[in-house]
Length: 528
Image (cartoon, rainbow, N blue to C red; front, side):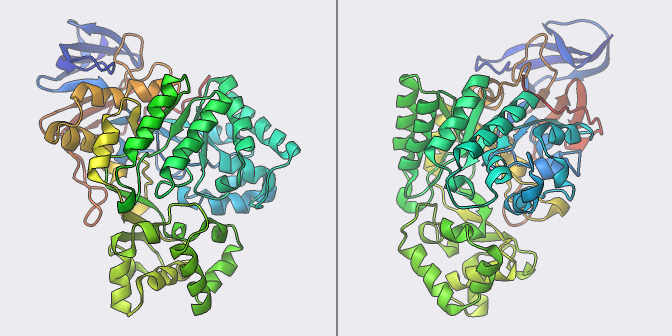
């Protein structure tokens, strides 16, 4: 007897080919037959009118801390994601040096590091801890360059020595041998913004030798976006490894349209045999710490001293001048986006600021907007998260049409149902509903390819991303006429999606109409 038999479906196999009518049979966690299938099954799903696709793959997650505390991962299941790849933007919870565990925890604060962080001396230690817990979806991990560097040099603002770089390469090899699907670097954040090109090229050559990916949060997604994309392409050219540009976009009104240039550079590189791609999320706002309005050099200074200094008018004037007359390269949200387009979503010490824009918070307190931002950072010990409405809708569509792109949420789950970017909940349904059905930016079959086989191939996820006999039974059934996201920035960041009818993970039904079944059939994936 079959475990699951899906009947009368519109099958999109993940290749980008048009849909075909048929059935899908599942046994022992694998797809065992397709086409017209007869036979008895423990569970039969009549999928008439529904599209049947491979489970969606989110190649850009930040779910390390969440997955250590809550196995259900409802936000991902609700949008049809069956496999999540975390460890992006240079951020990972391993490897850990006991000498620098405090520094790593501070640098990885967005990931909600566990109290037992010192247990993750190696990447294998981290994966074993993950494997000891039940999970609703499949989890794969990259190792963060930030973790590698901190384990060797702490947060020292200097080039790595040859011996230190050898140590980083050794730890990278251990992570890759243990099953990391690649390495990520965050050029915007310390310590990624300290690393030299030689350091990164050396590490990328290790990735090339293991046939693994390097993902990069580029140095500047605003005024310097073109130069920063060139920097990423150079890493691919000099090392020979595949480089994926994370959440590709151009921030700030004055930079809208520059994606036409950056996409041209990516296409030219691929035509020359330099392997470069990207992912994107389908929203016109990005999300990160409010402390990134500060020039990078300030984030490399003593952080307790920085908090104290931010309370003084003289220091604020100094920082304001550095922001408005920049000599450093970074996204510079205060200048390129503005505090009237910056929405606070996390500020635990000042909850009255959450859910409003910095300019509104400033007006209520009789402050200049930038002074209000500095005050929020000081009052919250720098732990403020904000959404920046910075991206052109036209640019989103332009990037989405490019063949080299896939979709990633870049979402960070906030326990307790607190506000976060709605991309954690609605990324894939928003593509299928708003951009495929309503705006016609992509064909449905192409959108599904970008959510399934493309990330599976890039992340070397064996037996994932296709509906094919012998492949893992990670499957989504959805109604293309109704699928949509409902989460938003203000009312409810976790509002449930519509139109995702069934989500199957490794041959077990994990969610039906937003109701979690408790299957916990996800696995921790180790690349080999």
